[in-house]
Each structure stands twice: as C-alpha cells, then as structure tokens.
Image 1 (cartoon, helix red, strand yellow):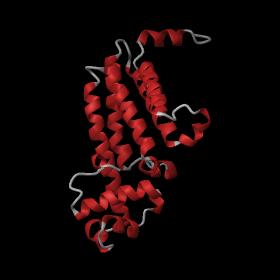
Image 2 (image 1 turned 180 degrees about the horizontal axis):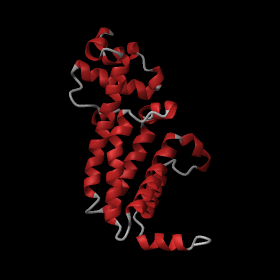
Image 3 (image 1 turned 90 degrees about the horizontal axis):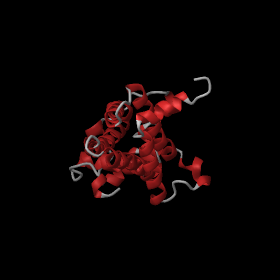
Image 4 (image 1 turned 180 degrees about the vertical axis):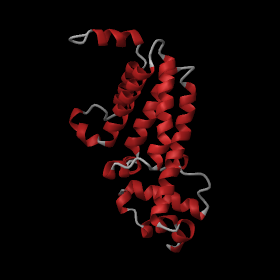
Length: 213
C-alpha cells in the first residue's frame, strides 16, 4: 500500500492501527488478521486496540469502512465526469474498480466476506456502494438517448459483474490469459464501456430478433 492509499492522519495511533489492519487484511486475509500482528505493525501496544476500538471486530470494521470510503471518494470524481464525457469517465471508473480489486484481492474479498459466508449485506461495502450502483444506472440512462430505466439497470449489472467477478475469482480465468496485462485489461474495459453505452436502438433490435419475438 502506498501513501496515496493510506487514510489521512496516519501518524495518529488510532489511524496507524487502521492502516496496519488494512495491510494485515491484505497480506494474510481477514480471518488471519490478529490483534497481535496489527498492533506490532502499527508500532503500538496491544492494549491500544481495546483503548481505541474496544475489540478486534470493531477495528476491522473501521479499517474496512475507511478503505471503502477512500475508494468511493476516488470514484466520485469519475462519476461526476460521466455526464460530460461518458466513454472516458466510465472507462476510468470500471478500470479503477478492476485494477483495485486485482491489486488488493484479500482486502476486496474482505469487504464481501459476510455476504459470501452468511448472505449478510449490511456491512460497509454493500451499504455504501448501493447508492453508487443506483447513481450509475441513472448516469448510464442519461448518457444513452432512449434507454429506459430497466435497460440501464441491466447494463450496469452486466458491467459491474464483468468487473468484480473476474477480479474476485481471478484464478478461475487464468487459463484464458485474458486479463493478465494492463493492455489486456484496457481492451476489456473498453469493450464493457462500448456495450454499456451502446445506442438504445441496438438493444431493441436485439430483443426483436429473439426467437418467438
């Protein structure tokens, strides 16, 4: 993790613990991130965890929420640019999500740990990302004349699924060698953008051409 990825005020003991927790989650996975390892990485006594967070679970929750808020701040800049330059901004946004998940695989999976394990979507990532999904649907609809809300929603589901699924399960696609280099991923993201922002008329033609339609 570089300085750009660290939460602000990392010199503060509480923030050092959050940074260390993020690093430990990424290095060892959320299940192996222990209080002892986190405190050692932060350069503080184990008692500091109880002092600032009361429990390991609260510390890990703060770390995950801090990292997702950082991601959302970066994404906000790109979302704000979509109305003026949909193709470039959406490409940068999807590329940012893809590269981030591939760069920090354990941290990315940790955000959806409860969703995977117990079908619980009440954590920071599902809660904070849900409005982004709705906003992206509306931005895509506005960027494609004639596209209705349901069709825009379908396109957003397809685009985000195409980004997050291969990032979370990269090993599943290793045999294809499709996303192994930055150049490969750039081509991939550009194709996702093309599909997401395709003219609405093309979608209507596709529906009419289905058997029995």
